[in-house]
Image (tube, rainbow, N blue to C red; front, side, top):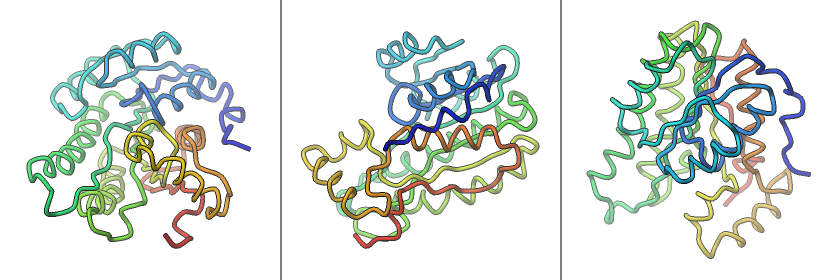
Length: 250
């Protein structure tokens, strides 16, 4: 059985607009699909123009824009210039860094950490006037960096920082809600690109060891995202979704 969480939310987003930053693939694209299934309208932002075009052909969003979301001036400007208000903004853009200290380029490390934080701050600042009261900013982070290991310095720092950022922003941009999804391994094209020929072995390991006895997929995360969007009592919190990965030893 796979994650099929959209059925219970059919119609729940009717009349609402969801901006998905990083909406051309993986978790972002699957969330966009479930938003449409729930009756919502879409605004899609992604770096890769061709992938964005394919997503737009499938989903028919109100607006699209192709640019790097870590260009904070452009991101903030784009959100601020959207016509009318929107109801939810989800940010999936960014990828983890697994570089050992001796191989670390400090400029790249600064961009990976500082750029990610700045991107989310830009979204929050633009959203104060753009997102409806009770709507949500939804960030995607991870759980892997909670266990120290060589090569995890930047990712571990971000893993620790994002819940604190989320909680503080929930106070500062209220009544807009701010929440964080912390995902474990999710079977996405990004995971495939990071693991290469080790992907199937990792899948098999997770099927064998996770309490849920299957691999978490984008549909699982998207279903959680829609629940957070539609449950108006949720703000300032971090929601783990990893199939119990943190409960088992590596």
